[in-house]
Image (cartoon, rainbow, N blue to C red; front, side):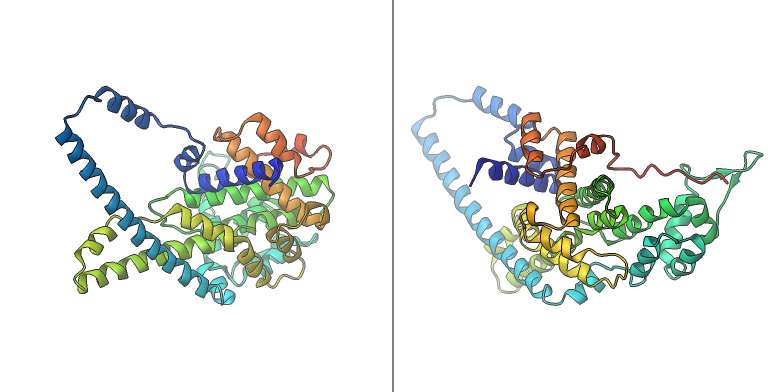
Length: 386
């Protein structure tokens, strides 16, 4: 493996760990937390010469601990292997996953297609949006929030209750980013203990990639809206894998506890109490199935004006960037740039690493300067004052 590829894989691995939690990413890089440092000092200070009987007792205790730890690890692997088997069985029916695990609104492709037309207007969008009650609720909540609410000439807050009024206030350009982002957020898993930050990291990663792709498309004079949606939706497969993983882990773990109880296996039942969801198995499942599944899910969307599948296939298959379509290049470059910015914000990448990492993606001339000025977390919504 070349040094460049090794660095690329290392940066991607850091980002994957960060998706689970910042602590895991820091541990992966060998950063020692303050609590660990205190513990090491305490051990050093209490070190003393032990009597032979004490040494033997400690040895026996450590041996028992290791034996128990190995047994727990065996049970944990067994549980997670069953989880993977159940996920693989689900992957055979992507239509079902699209409808149930992803929960993507069937009316949304029609609305996004309408937003993709140059001649679109609020009057054309409103009848389609009206068929999605959840969207009405979200937009009304948004437009009446302190950040966007309006006041009349007397300083009284104007409460918006009509979908058409909310859409008109927001305007088409804002809606083109807000509606798909709201839809994306609805697809995210809500309960991911013991890693509660996953849904936040997934959302941030997709928004950041979407905004990077949009800017890169503008630099390349490509369809920036298509690029934005491709960047936003490219992690759909990852979302489904995370949903299924947490669902099946709880299911398999619960079944194993009941079985051990019913079959009179106290040691196994006790060990199961120490089994926790493994980030290693989770990341392996995401890496193995995530982007391939994204391609399958995007192909389920009946778009007429938007095109994602070719670029997503190139991305998922790790096609050489020189051989990619223009939109495929935008996706791989947009994702890489967002990963760099995210790792930089969390102090998980050095300046030298960043230079070498980004150089591998052959960003177009002037793109980095434009991307540096791009807000990757906010849409900079500007409301129509009329």
